[in-house]
View (cartoon, rainbow, N blue to C red):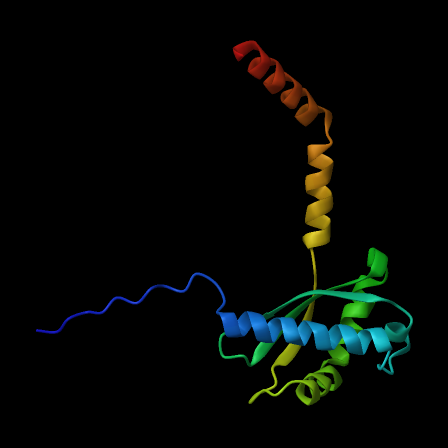
Length: 141
């Protein structure tokens, strides 16, 4: 009779994935800050690397980035993806990894989402609802 052992399901990335992704983010931020890229577009714009997500096998990394102010977003992303092999080399030299992950740069939409949430929270409807809720709470006490 075989007994099944139950494994806890992984809910999110493991500790090693998170640590490696954060180290990659730091390396990329340093390289971009120093302006080590030859692409004239990339050397003339500040780019924020907000997050790096890495696959469980540590071979592929998605880099969430945004040019400062959101200017020339498409051109900057194309430039970053063109520079990905050079940036991968920089990551490999800075970190002691068995495999250096391939880098894919994508737009970080969290800034737009945060702005949208802020607009909703500042809307008249929400203010009206909060005022009504406060009145109801004051009436209960």
